[in-house]
Image (cartoon, rainbow over all chains, first blue to last red):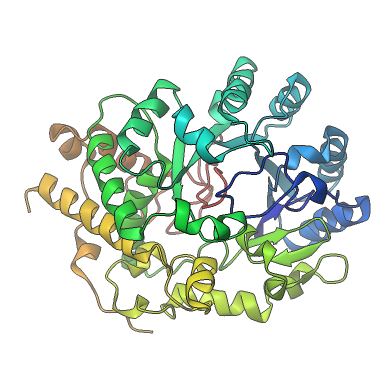
Length: 363
Length: 72
């Protein structure tokens, strides 16, 4: 069968060696509990029964805390199964060493990390439990990966908070200086970030407006420097139009082929839902992926892709964003079909890019 | 659900050369990555599959995915 499956795998749950104050999960060092070998086998073997292509994104918390032997066992299981597996990891890189770098190189693991480009901004909230910032260690991890030739497998996520507000173009220049491909997410009210929302989060409108300033600089920058978030906004505008012309409908990962699995085997629509036990779609030690992927919650989230989200049926950019984030809607409105609170930013940004395209075309 | 057809749907196509002439170098790059339609298929796109017809991408090195909580 030609089905595909994107698994966000949390081998140590929310456990993490950092305690970033804005994080959308609330991991702590004492919460580390490694996934059992039985659960790991069930995840990979049932995934292979369900799909011919399986992408595993190792996530957390901090997934390197699982230890390299756990990862080696995982790729050994994958290699023995008929499906085509690929692996990527989202790590803070503070635990990276030569052995990990060689492993990632040898098994073609794509590596994502979190970095805000400017040390002062990064260290304001990406900290160890004792308050020390992690910027120096993260950049050292990036350089170590580069020394093993992994620069093409590497990307970075920055987070927009009040510390970054008014300084986004400074971050832009810093990311260029570090030669990083990156994306940016606004902070969300979840996990440890729930407590810090008032202190750290900006409004969606403020985020959208400053993002547009960066769009204007980026799209006209003669230097090659990739910001995936901006590329994606343009791509979604264009591809949504092309899909409509071709009569093709699509869904996002959480609405379709995405699933997150924690260290106990509990399955959720995406990694953001894992703090909410009520959002569990089943357990991989008891259920099949056929059951999990057709759960009532998954089906309801999928309705967002067909315009069921609050306000989506009247939005001219609906087909580009496909209803936005269901988890964000649940957090801010209490309803999985409510409005994604970043919706206002999406509209500002799509409108800005559309006007820019029209200006270039002379329309 | 019948959605209202909006103007933006018709106005997103742009030749990369147009973008370059306007100085929008990165925009030109993005449009080149999005590919040119050949018999309804945009296989040049740097994703796993053509985003219109689902045919597999012809670039062995591609695979950068789009997601919110992780880079890939």
